[in-house]
Amino acid sequence: MHEKRQMQDMIFKIKADFLKVLGHPVRLQVIEYLKDGEASVGKIVSALGVEQSNLSRHLATLRELGILSARQEKTTVFYGIHDHDIFKVLRPIAEILRKKLRKSEKLLESLGKE
Image (cartoon, rainbow, N blue to C red; front, side):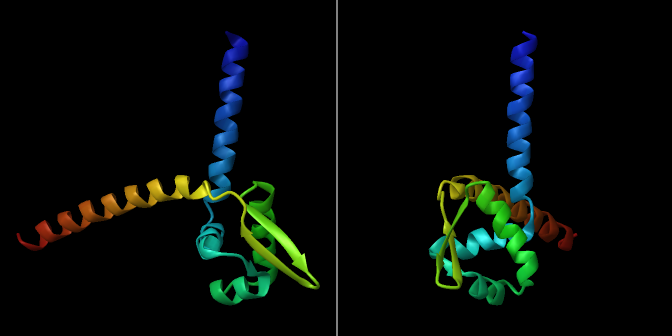
């Protein structure tokens, strides 16, 4: 029973670490930006307006997690989504947030009517 508990604790830790990596706005922006295809680091920097050194750390983290892949063409590195299943995680989160926003909007509307 103790071993089973340790295994469950380890699984929860792995899940929490995975979600923690996704819990950064820049990383989520990168994933969304690359949804339609790969892009060079320079293009991502321009599109997201982040410093290249900062972006490079986030790209490396997403690569280590297996979400992104990278390929080099001469001196340019291109990143793309390696595992599109990530959107199976992100879409339900977006839907939950949309529902929450609609609920908040209805509440605000009702406050304005009083």
